[in-house]
Length: 230
Image 1 (cartoon, one colour):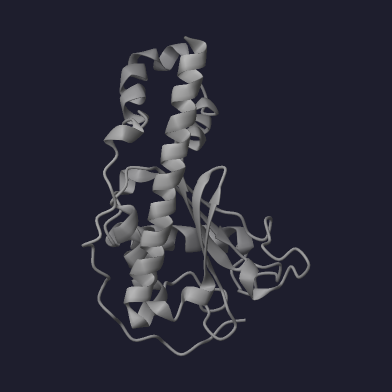
Image 2 (cartoon, rainbow, N blue to C red; image 1 turned 45 degrees about the horizontal axis):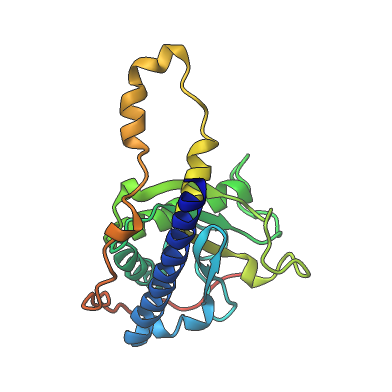
């Protein structure tokens, strides 16, 4: 019986990896279909990791994601995030979202405000745009700012690529690890255990997952603001 269950789980993992590969291509095709979004292709990094499908939107000197020291989402990034949100709405997987900065200290005048707060504010601003694009808000499991603690370019802590938004479409194993790491209910919370189980239920088996619909169209085009960023 154990061997049968292991074989079934292995087959589920293969099927899920193939489905996430389809999703990767769907994101790529959606961006390529709109000329305004296609300009961002060099700043989009798509890869499959042990956690699932990772979508990273990295900064560039000629096309910054945010104005220096700010968390306001400009029009060009808003269109991009809403397009991605529309695609991710078509699959049931849970999502994590991270904001990252480079190692340059925050230069604002706000006391106590640092790259930690800035990266968290940018992550939350990005979350709102994904939801505006169609992603159900309940599918987000974690939104966090990591400042410069996980640089993409370790050789240059101030490189533009380190300023980025990272979206992970979690696979089933990653979701299970997430919930296993959550604090257990105490005796005082036992009465709410049933509701917690319902709220944290994992998605349906892979066989029941919906396919990615090719008829999903790209979002409306908006003009891009002039580049400005450190």
